[in-house]
Length: 157
Image (cartoon, rainbow, N blue to C red; front, side):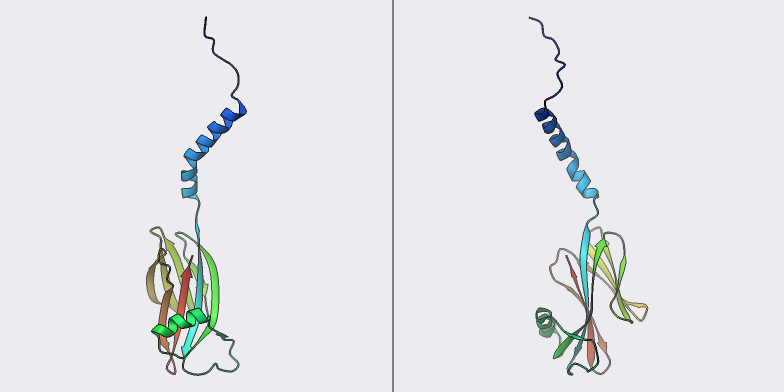
């Protein structure tokens, strides 16, 4: 009995098994190279003890966010001035304008951290880093005129 090499092409099943094995081997490398977008929401909030001023386009603040801020800060009323949503890619800084005088620049760093620059009247006021592993929002705040305050609340997901 002699052994002859077979010249039959692989069956469809053998081809599928081979293709699945190759794909499984390269899939982690392919997924690691795909840029992941981080969704960012920035909310500009005004805190005051006064009632909502007439003629201003202010919204009542979301009750959950109002409760969180009210536990930490002293104001009786919180109003949403503006809200911006954006998708951020790692390594690329992106600016979000919240008002004529206020904007934030967000950059997603490789170590799963967001670097946030708060910009007021064209100047960087503060730079903070925030771990994206934390479910908490990043809150930046400052005093305003007439015993009021402003807040920039950033949520990442």
